[in-house]
Amino acid sequence: MAETYDQLLRRASAALTAAGIEPDGARYVLEMRSDFTPSQLRLHARDVVPAPVAKQFEADLPRLLANEPPQYIVGVAPFYGDLFEVTPAVLIPRFETEELVAWAAAEQILAQTGLDVGTGSGAIGLTLAKQLPHTAMTLSDVSAAALAVAKRNAASLKRQATLVQSDLFAALPARYDFIIANLPYISRRETSVMDASTLAFEPALALFAADDGLALFERFVAEVANHLKPKGSVYLEFGYQQQPALAALFARVLPQAQVTFRRDLAGKPRMVKLVI
Image (cartoon, rainbow, N blue to C red; front, side, top):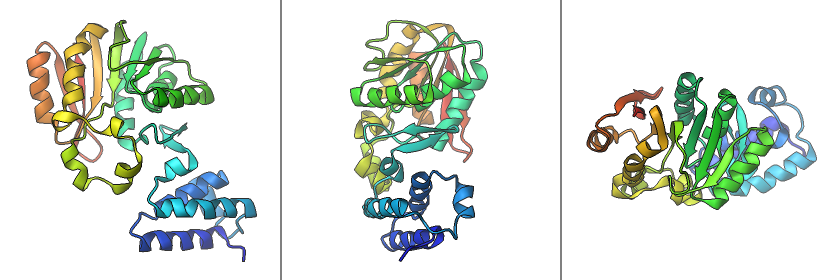
């Protein structure tokens, strides 16, 4: 029997809740499969779901029940007003990272060059390419599979950027007006409190770092000054418990840097700017 959008969503949400899984993923999948905004899905709540959409959603539901992220199921994730392709080769962009992008975009309007290290899907660097149209953006990642996703996003969003495969700065000899990065910063000791879906499906390469999550920061900070123009800026995201360790790292390795920490909208210290 044909179901309305509301009936289909209620049934799926009940099944997910019974399995101990966040039911909102069903709404997101149904929106994307129907090419609806959230308000459109509400407006069409009493409409019968077209047969092709219903069939596709029935195929999606077991994946949701297996705790697969809905963004991977439909292949796209929202970020800063755009939809970015995502695959298990890249992290799903988080809302909190939009705050880091907004900070850089507000301050770097005169920048000629910018670098996004560890770009993943390209969400940070390609968003800045839109927000800073006069800035030549370079996007790098150690993962060829991640760069392939970023390249497709650059094409679909019609953003100009240079993509480079590089382990941090190894293949990046140039100097930039600013550098931005969301490096892997999670300690393996935190797995017991992490979301099961993240652990099962998102790439460990982009999540975890040794030395309590600080290993990539230590390498990055040791090299970054050689890749900045005079008075260049660095913008970094980090774990909310890492500010003391990072402050000590910056003071030891970059004592000349002006360091500004910033809290996210939830009030947690999550971002830092260095002027070197």
